[in-house]
Image (cartoon, rainbow, N blue to C red; front, side, top):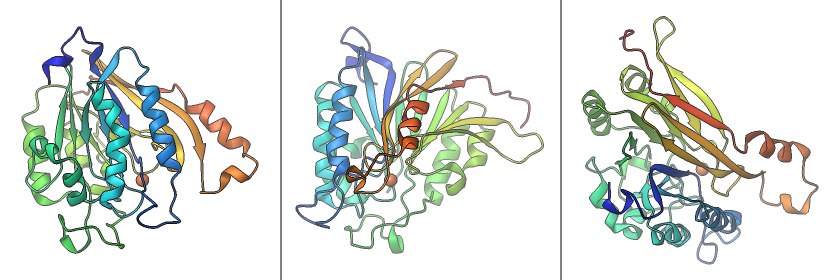
Length: 302
Ligand SMILES: [Fe+2]
């Protein structure tokens, strides 16, 4: 936690903004017919975030910086779009998605290496006065080339947690004494960490992206004595699907995640067509929805 967020400077140390699937694409360099809608929308979202008072202390990006293959030019665009947040004193916490590339990421965000907690992986922790957020790295690279240059093939769509990261997660959760949230690009079910999430008494929520769809659900491990853990799936920061960001505020007894949905669209050329009524309805349905993560997971099941 940086001291500049401890009060008096307009940042709420318990407030984070969550972005995911920002999918920036430099089509002047590669994939020249590729989509650039997100390049327009993300700066608009950032501009809106900067009007918040107080400002969040942290901005967390849950992966998919790049539109497709993790090219460095895409990361440069993402860095430029996010820079107004860090210029405003908001600390960036960044995680990998399936469209990303670790080498490109680290070339554009070299200082982030200091924050990485697991060798070979981009895993970090964000602390507020009331809770911790662990941000995992679920990127599954092609042929095990975890730090290779990007190629046109990109990474696997599905995610993974390797043995080293899994061991680190288990050890970290075993010693966690504060309310803890776990976040990643992929669903916990897909990467096989449901047991770790559900059976740790201090883990009260799991938050992820990847789907481009705002969703509220829960995890359980088995059907007999399982606890449940609240989950939320984040909108996209401009590519397709539910469009927007979410604000995460931690309290002494709970955390609240409130979605700000600004739009919904699907496919690249929708602007020329009549707008489907369901798209507008979907924005109205989601905008302002709040999920509460109570810190009251009973300790008697496991
Ligand atoms: Fe995505």
